Image (cartoon, rainbow, N blue to C red; front, side, top):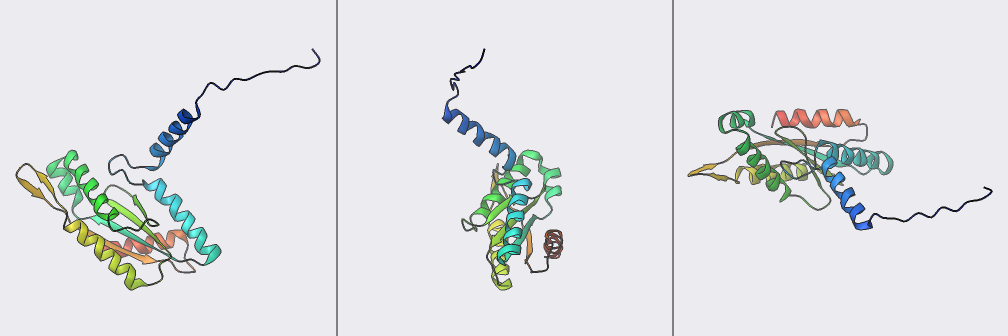
Length: 178
């Protein structure tokens, strides 16, 4: 045979492919308990903000919100209530954010907020206080009981000489002392 023509028929529907890709994206980047970005999602956003800072000198802020005494709550009330507390806390934080801000679940009881194009530490501190108050003023009904939690929220602004790890370490230390 000197030449050949092969004809392919596309049997997959484009919308099915898009739905599958969306499902894979969700599985990769969304925390199943809180339905906000997971650590991987936050790290991708952090890397992008860091690259933007290096290239265009656009500073950003990082806040960590750590649910106080979360392990005690989980041990006392179990995983189901602990997960509801995490979901409530994520919703409380999300209600404080602008559309360009990033929220992710960093680890078991800690959330990260990435705030682009913020230059003023007092503005970052006000933002942290808003998040803290929103979490503190949220509650869950469990039977006849109202369950409330508090959070320690702290963070820092990026600096021109920062590495990504130094920025994260500084932000986590400031949260631990908040």
